[in-house]
Image 1 (cartoon, rainbow, N blue to C red):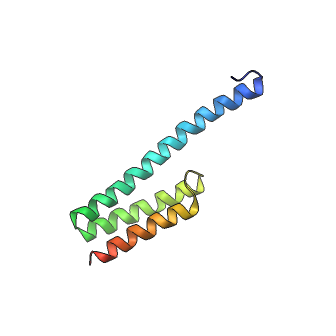
Image 2: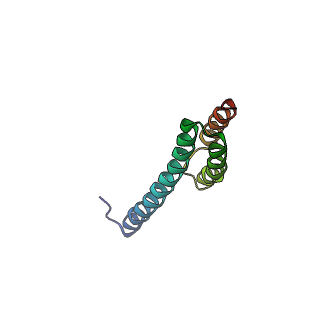
Image 3: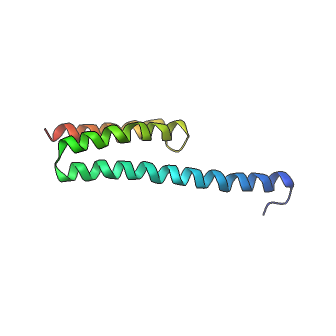
Length: 87
């Protein structure tokens, strides 16, 4: 339990940061799910459009420290190769 004023402030900051990061993670997952659904439907055009919308969102997550750089690169690479394979 936080006792000192500094530790109480840190606890408040952590709660705020957790909420922001949770919202960011959720938003990114939604974009990725849209790409997955477009791939599953077999529509390459829709998949490509969804992928182009998801790409900057995922990289923004990297910038903000929600995801590791390599994790984002791996996800984008795998999605991209699956979209190319649809052709």
